[in-house]
Amino acid sequence: MITGKTAAAHAGASSGISTAEAARIPEQVTRHSFGARFFHGIMALSMLALLFTAFLPKVGVQFAWVKWHWIAGIVLTISVLYHIIHASFVLDFWSIWPDAQDREDAGNRLKLAMGQSAPAPKKFAKYPLENKLYHMVVMLAGLSAIGTGVFMMKRVRTPFFVRNPYLFSDMTWGWMYVLHGLAGVGFVGLVTVHIYFAIRPEKLFITKSMIFGTISRENYLGHHDPQRWVVAGQGSASAGSGTKKVSA
Image (cartoon, rainbow, N blue to C red):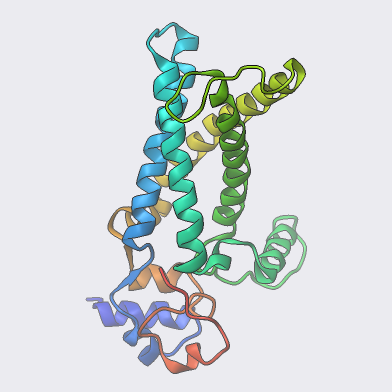
């Protein structure tokens, strides 16, 4: 019978840390704080509302979609501003950006996939490389949608702006609508891909962590590099490697 300590020892050995260090890691490792999960939930709801209000009228569902669309846009904008502040001053801002190790491992994975010799890639830090790249694409699409959407609110009646459809030339408005539309269409694909990978069996532990906030010690040691993502309770040998302890 495999106990929790035995499983931790096996996972710890595969992660390059001792059994004692593995045992000191909490059984449940915090991956996302409540603030991060709250933001993700609000952002997801506002994003779905934006997509539904934008595309349902295109398939014949008629309702006062403009009002609900800009309301969802305001909610998304506020949530993104909160996230920027929260990530900058509470979380580890750089943990979501690709680093040198990610780039090196990506190159090694590519070489191995092509049948070439290369060192075995290391385990990921807190966020896998694909999550980091996805975050970058979503950020670009989101800022495009928000930036153009704020100006487009000048063309409708809202409590926030005096309506002025002549703020820009027809050409400028046209390009703004094109950019806003491309961001919207892009989000259809991005949201679809996100949901698809979120429900895949091997990714469910990450999805559950966005709901409950934690992952098991075995999943932490099995999928992440303790030297790159140092958590509270980890042994001094890992913490002393120069790796910054990051918050959830």
